[in-house]
Length: 316
Image (cartoon, rainbow, N blue to C red; front, side):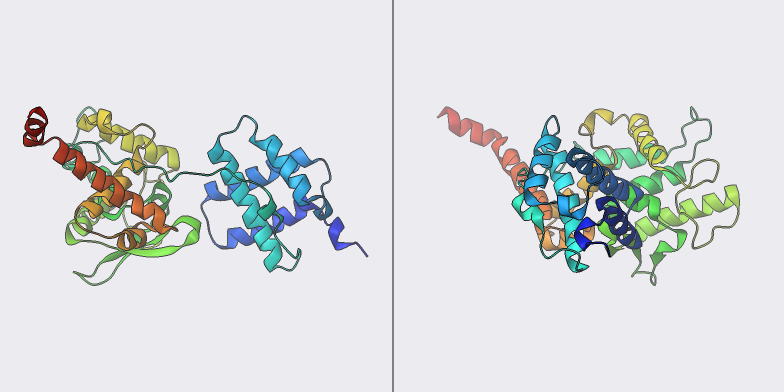
């Protein structure tokens, strides 16, 4: 009978990934798990078994893995391995988690990156709402719906792609959109009548173009009626920024996420607390949500600093 310590690490990884797949995470998340786990396994050697995954071996492998990689990449790989061993502990395969003995980089919480400019969201929506005749097949109803779902419900790119036509539920005045968030965590975001009307107008325009829309159909589609993919949605948002002339107000590397950050920042500006922001955005940590409050406070201090009377005091 095979010693349990001689079980192939590769087979255990496949069991872990299969268990994670049941939670319905995004395809991107599963690929990241697979990439991180296999990258470290290759640094340990060939035909790696459970016996080989000791704290000392893992520390050496992570030391080699960290060379030439960013702290964020190393932290993500550490988290993947920590989740993997957490699964093995729960399953009774190992007695403890050796990752507690493996160092990881300290990660600062990234600063929010909302759109710059007080009226930029309104300018963006107004511009995109107009049919651009320079486009081959303008579809302003669809484009406005995408922007509004990020700006007024704070949805991530993956959440937008996962939306079904039947994801909007509830009676008039109590409407909400049901979202499968990061890590498969479900949440419901209130939908105000204005956003509900924008989505309804888009769905009606889609019926005119392609016919019946069933509740299980993907909500967002391309100009051929096929479900939007990641690259297509990113290009759509970039195109909206260009058409509205606000590309220079989008923080570098943010794109669609800048719309979600704008939603959260405006919540904070209007008095929402970190706990409310956490629930609405589906954050796993209150610390992430607290960042929006702190950014708002910094903006308020900058506004006070710009007061001409304060400058006059400085000249006294």
